[in-house]
Image (cartoon, rainbow, N blue to C red; front, side):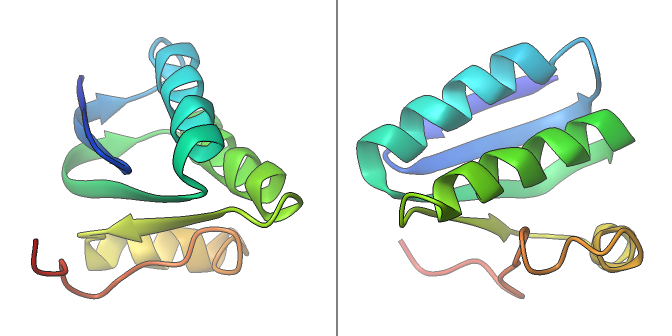
Length: 101
């Protein structure tokens, strides 16, 4: 797993699973508190397990309660299908393409 931040963007690469949830959760909550709107770039994500997906959804739900937002960027079609199947589209909205810098 590789995690990087740039402003309000959290970039995830590799495999995100239970072992990395605590690190990702802490970064996500810090970014949400600082910026309000956070973009999670998953374009280089190889895989994500169910607990990690729930962690992202929970962070989004917590932020929504305080007027903050989380958006996925670079979401592959297979991940969008999993998010839809899990009923998490409202909590984990995704951009179809990356926005210009």
